[in-house]
Length: 524
Ligand code: BG6
Image 1 (cartoon, rainbow, N blue to C red):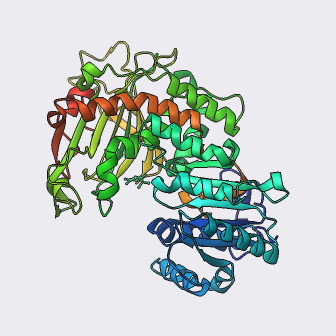
Image 2 (spheres, rainbow, N blue to C red):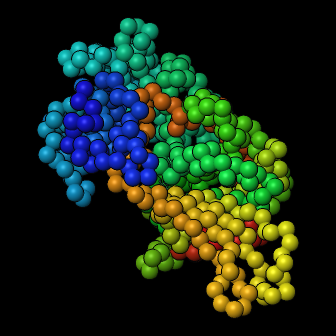
Image 3 (tube, rainbow, N blue to C red):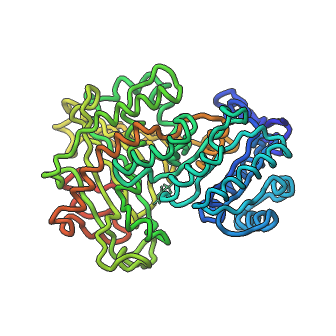
């Protein structure tokens, strides 16, 4: 294939990254993906038009898609290839600065086949069509099945794909076959195990890609590089120097048009069972001996094994739940959660949670991790803050009227992709005064090359067969083992309504979180 060099971005791509001395293409692709067909099951849905097709088009423009490649959309809707191409173009055209100069080439790789999700014959027909397309376009029979459908359909779809021979791949002399599923992976431990059984009936573990789009964020991936490629942080990254860690994923958006899903999941299933747990693992895990998918996933699983179970009779000491009421976000009045379309007027679904997590291992014994996430908070902000311990003795106590602030390291994920370290310095002047200053690194500083969006990264990794950024089933089950008793207690206890604290939209959550962590999530 042409590779990066001959494609349109070559000028930008060839520029040297000033600080690293590496060419950008060296940082973008480790190897070229093999020719393949990406089959999007659920191609008429929102995820496909908002995320998947734009990500595939961007990868194409960057020259990162294999050559040849095919995209086959499948859904219940009857459509011709031309209609699917037209819809895709519409989905792309809302984007600013869109380059359509190479659209005809991309469009020629788009195909559409209607399927009925409960009809084996429909999948047999799909299998025959895919074989024919593979031969015609010489894509070696390599296939990725991306399930962009409601999770309730994952099991049956995997089964029908399997029964029509589409999961077999290399075992039958065809190319490889991979299946991609998005969270939620079940709604508790039992359903997660059940889902996994259905997937494993026809797909092996190394064929299953369980997506967590947080892991594909550049700054999230950077956490491991920061921790393990610098000698100065690791020696202080433990209970001897760290007082506590806050991990915050605050959103200003409300439930939007997703009430049907959100009413059933709430913040704990929507954000904690997946994204928050991954962030926790990246901060807390031990260094693997080698940067390789299985070794990294082993170390994450060890963190989940060390999660101290919550004493359910003292849930309030570890968990604060909230639900947003009406308020103002960025100056705009917004309704409360119960007034949102599709939400029950007496809903008890939490839209905010703060959890105090303890890890029972040598490194982290006694260090609380405060995980918080919520909708309709003051602003969208995702960050990890490492709060170091205070100095053991303040020799300035006689001359200073204020306390010396402990050092803080902020790993900013959104909106500022940055790392900043605060420390104390002497304020200039005759008097002994301290001031807190910050040393900042902005992630895109000195970098002018292309940045992959999270969906581009996961699609590329699926094509490359790299599982590093995907959940492994043991991790999924360990997290559910931790969360399921908490969810059961929250959802069945007699004081469910009292546990759910109201907070005003635009605030930083219920005031009661101060009793848990001493500070509000957005506060520094
Ligand atoms: C999704 C959740 O997984 O992550 C959403 O279902 C949430 O409720 C979203 O809004 C947040 O992702 P990001 O990338 O915007 O922080």
